[in-house]
Each structure stands twice: as C-alpha cells, then as structure tokens.
Image 1 (spheres, rainbow, N blue to C red):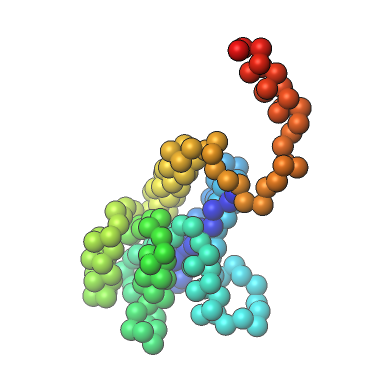
Image 2 (cartoon, helix red, strand yellow):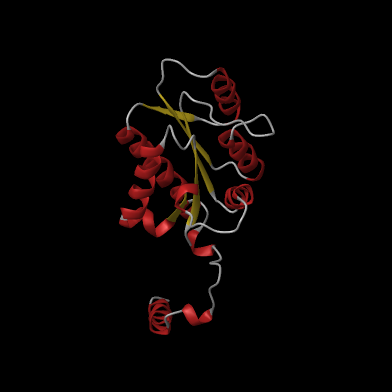
Length: 183
C-alpha cells in the first residue's frame, strides 16, 4: 500500500523545494515503495476545476506536508491562502501533518498568524536549505512508517484489494510444515 503525500506551499516561493521533495521520494527506492506524492503543478491539463482537483486530492491524501516561508500567497474568497485552506481541510480529517518552516528574517503578518495556528496543533521543523528540508522530510516519513507498520501490528493489517490468490502456497505449506515439526 502506498501512502499519498500532499505537498502544500506557496508554489512560487517553494518551486525548487517542491521539485526536490518529489524527486527525492520518486527516486528513493525505499520511499518510493511506500509513498506517492501529489503536487498540483504535475497534474495534466484537464476539464476539471482547479479548486475541485486540489480539494479532492487533499482529502484523498494520507499525509500533508506544508512548507511555510515569508510570503502568505494569494488570498482566496475565504480570506485565507490556498496553503492555509489546504491545511485546515486536511487537519479536519487527519493529524498526519508535517510542517516545515523556512528560516526568514521578515514574514508577512498573515504568515505569523498561520504559524501561531500551526504551533497550537503540530510540532514543526525549521529549515534553512533544501538539503536540511529533505533530511527532515525523510525522518518524518520514516517515523510515520515506523508507527504505521511496526507499532500497528503489521501481521494483522488488512491489505486493500488483496485476496487468497495473493498467497504463495509453497510458502504457506512450508510455514505450517515447520510449525508442525517444532511442536
């Protein structure tokens, strides 16, 4: 099962970081087995509404990665930026929110309020460089996997879309033969 990761940020301010996150996860043999990344700029042109598309993808995601910097971004009809709107929408359904705040000397006032809101709900990590950001994201994703797989009884988990046809009968018979021989 691959967990869907939604990347949320000011797209202009974090263009390079977003590309680095996607590239890191897609090109890492371990991470790529467990995570699929959604970034809005990589979806193909279609007749779908942009607002419906990102809303659907936020709600369909298992993990939200938010990048916060110095620019709040475009303000929607709601009075919030797309990043804050995505954060609020995801946070209503799940707590798997990973926030990374870029070192900045000067921030937009709305960003400061957004950071205060985040700090009431989530632990965030500061970063100064893309390399530090990628290192912190890898640590967060690995920690997430540890909690999902190891601490949640991996052997008892139901695997979506699996059936008895997925069982290797030779392994099954070998397992029970070894159990019977050790009894």
